[in-house]
Image 1 (cartoon, rainbow, N blue to C red):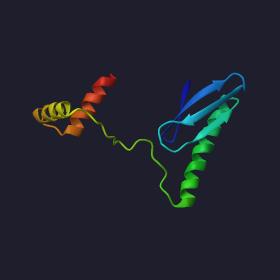
Image 2: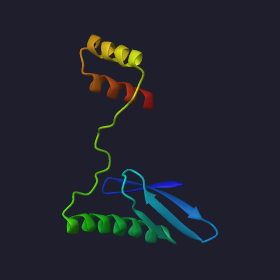
Image 3: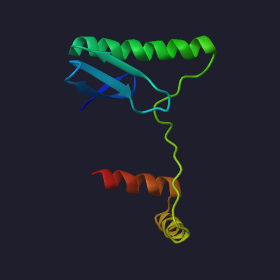
Image 4: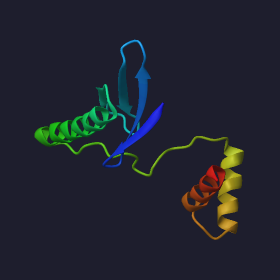
Length: 109
C-alpha cells in the first residue's frame, strides 16, 4: 500500500495483481472518492481527476465539499480520566483542548 496526495486529500493505493491494476480511495473524508490506473502517471492523473470531479459535483449542487479533517473530534473517556486531564490542563495554565493536542502530538513522536 502507498499514499498519494492531491489538494490536501490523502489516498491509499493498492495493487491488484490479478487485474494488473492500481486502485485507490481517498481516506481523509467521509465521502467516497475512488480511482484507478495501470501506471503511476495514469494513477496520479486519475486521483486528480476524481477529486476535481468531486469538487465540481459539490459546486453544481451548491454544497461545500467536505474538507479533509476539520480539526475537531469528540473523545469519550471515563469521568475519572476526564477530571484528571482537566486538572492537568488547569495546572499547566492551558485549555483542555490545547493540553490534549499537545499530549497527542507527544504520543506521535
